[in-house]
Length: 156
Image (cartoon, rainbow, N blue to C red; front, side, top):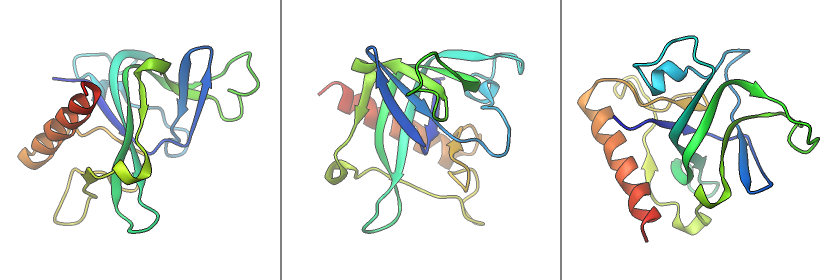
């Protein structure tokens, strides 16, 4: 299974050939890396080779859409700090090489991300992080289509 994480990213900085992203977690909780890679330990601090799918709300029409992605990203369970003051505004918990970071122009953000409802469990809810790890066929089929979509755009 592909390692994937959907995020409403809070902040992104480019520094020395890398993209540093920060996604706010609820309270002081960590990113649950074992939900991205179920075979890993709950005590894992960092996970490599993760496809990060960036999600944003369309300001004109509402709704959530794929806004970009990071390929082969490194995800940290906890917020990281750096010697660079620019990166320490809020820290970072995702990093990828700049050539692996893709941001779509607003007019190309057309892949709709369904939101969780009482009848639509397992999708992106109020959190900034969605693991897309629920075993329901609808979640797994959507997850597969989203991965195929960004991989298709990466190859164009």
